[in-house]
Image (cartoon, rainbow, N blue to C red; front, side, top):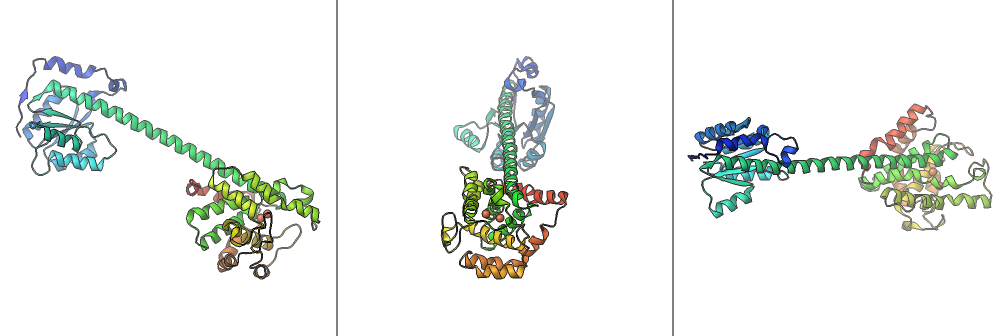
Length: 403
Ligand SMILES: [Fe+2]
Ligand SMILES: [Fe+2]
């Protein structure tokens, strides 16, 4: 529609004020004259007049269109600081433009200044609901346009400042959470190693058995999160050995009854070391440390739990721990063959081991053997050992943020 320009006698004097507005926005070093303005009006004559007036008032960056649909694309590419939008346009109206922009930019402050000759109550209400921030009635008063543009730019700047601040805060929180996660995993890694180094030269046992445990957890249907928990919690199963005297832990021969009694306390010592944490990972570590020597038939220690009273993560560790202990060389024994180990484990099915879990373990035996070979005790190159540990304990951080 055609517009008329209402000349304000003070127009020139007010124009000079554009560069010297003192507001919160100008304190943020934003220059109003550099604001990007998008003019949308179906009448080319109106567009020309508005462009000329705005340039004459000091604005440098103005782009325009006479088509509502094109304005959507321009909004994306040009990213205007303010949109001067005509309401009554053929085809895609100003309301259609606002609807589309609002649904595509739900979290943004839409800087829309509506230009209209229709200022009745229902039109205003409809425009406000659609996302308009302010109105300019035709015919235009240039001083009023400048004041309203300034107001919208100021609110937009404050909105963007708050948004940017929130983003920075979120990034900081994320970085710190990741740092905390990293140090937590580091502590877990070192706890597992501390225990294993005392009676196992390379510390590869915890790496192998934690891999077996994760694989077995998946085999019996535990979900991704639970399987990851098992992977990271199982290396701490023998952390309580830290509290066992060397004369018992490192004794080459058989333990006497008194020594055996002390040895058994490593389960409770480990649970106490890991207790009191709010982390799901530490809580699982505590359960595993306490229950990994419980037997399916109730003859285990420390509590004599029976069958499914024993938490499943502990039953998983029992199977995998024993398999690795039997197939590995220890100071007091040779490594058993896989065939002998499987025969022995089958013999203990239903007494030491959960029968179903043992069956599931035997189903995946070829994969278990592959893991065992990959992380063999004969691998003593410190560089390779370091990279194996990092693969297990560090590279997978992304997956365990919520553990
Ligand atoms: Fe143990
Ligand atoms: Fe173990």
